[in-house]
Image 1 (cartoon, rainbow, N blue to C red):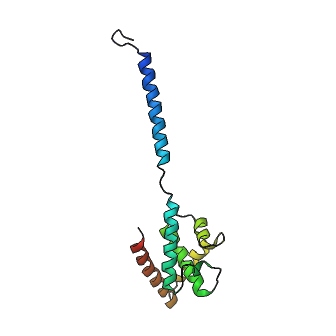
Image 2 (image 1 turned 120 degrees about the horizontal axis):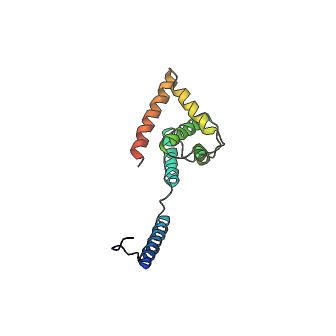
Length: 143
């Protein structure tokens, strides 16, 4: 060290201690301020999607999650699952749980929706129109 610089051990120790103390306080504040998990928002979105899609086909949101395999109910459920994949950040297994379905059901539902809508017949055109209409409704209602 030069003659003009004097090492002050006590000052250095005090600064180091204060830096550690401030760091610990910041960590404590950050851990207390954890954001609400996005899954809560996504689960609310799933409920909204279920209700909107079910209403389009004349059902309630609860009816499409029951163990009903009737064609119209199953189709509404498949569309609702399709839109949950598009409008939420939930994993496939989380979406399947929200619909009380087994592993792999979501992939099958999406495949059915895409296959049906790609048909060049009246059913395919109606399916595409339903998806377009529901997508517009959901985009308006989603935050």
